[in-house]
Amino acid sequence: SDSPRALSGIQPTAGSFHLGNYLGAIRQYVALQETHDAFYMVVDLHAITVPQDPVELRANTRLAAAQLLAAGLDPERCTLFIQSHVPEHAQLGWVMNCMTGFGEASRMTQFKDKSAKQGADRATVGLFTYPILQVADILLYQADAVPVGEDQRQHIELTRDLAERFNTRYGPTFTIPAPHIVREVAKIYDLQDPSAKMSKSAASPKGLVNLLDDPKVSAKKFRSAVTDTDTVIRYDEKEKPGVSNLLTIHSALTGTGIPELEERYEGKGYGALKTDLADIFVEWVTPFHERTREYLGDPETLDSVLAKGAEKARAVAAETLAAAYDRLGL
Ligand code: ADP
Ligand code: NA
Picture: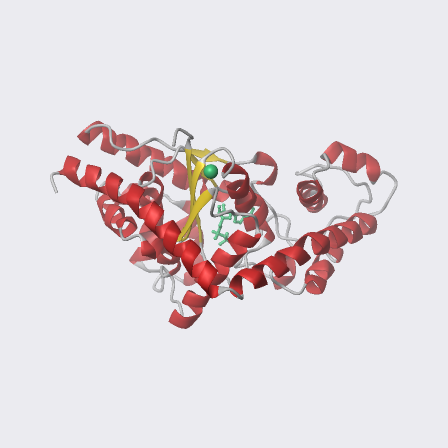
């Protein structure tokens, strides 16, 4: 195909995706399948960088795939697969480990954050090198665009550096990818702590909106979101991070511009915005639940989508790996 390539991966570990994952990443996956030859994977090899229960991991991996389909990925328009079904990821991952400086890997801030949460002795070498596996994930598909949230920008920079290094040393082998980050939704914040990004490892579960939670529970989280002591509804990331985050989410879910929202809520209190947003979210998420249940309830279809996806992915990945091995003298 002549279309540019897109590649992204998402971890299966939390069971449910959260609203930050959806707005920051998954929505862009859905959009890019129209313009790109798009490859999306559930990254179970990344999941095992921290301890996993095998039964739970397998179930969560399927659940992640079902949610991606429910969110709008169409197997006719993109290639959806499970990372461990394509062995070339681990193989090129090793090659990329051998291309990366130890100091260079040590500068990855996501590792610092994640290992701090694990405790220094518990953090594995796999967690340390996971950004390098991510480099291989991207380069295997000769991806032009990598849809991600802001927190992943540094890893795409590393990918570009390593691709250039390899190409310079061994001859042109890899496409240099660029991050595809949609600024407006690149960082969705925690509803209780609008200085922190919404994350599955949130300090308080009240700040984290999981897509598969009971919609009533999520609605309550929106209604009790932390704002500020002022009353004016205005987008101002510095002075009003809580309100700005709610406006961002509202705008993303309804397609209404932020200036229009500011006008609509002029003279109204924060309560009106929060209640409306709770309703908007519930209306959006209810059919998402239904579609997720449908995909989970039809394991044969899900298996077949993932098997076909792995086959298509493998054809591309194997060609790239063979070229890289050849260049290396392997
Ligand atoms: P988490 O940060 O909760 O561990 P992941 O690391 O699995 O989530 O992220 C999966 C994708 O979702 C990545 O592309 C990441 O950039 C994006 N993402 C995660 N959290 C957010 C957020 N709060 N806002 C925007 N995008 C996010
Ligand atoms: Na496509």
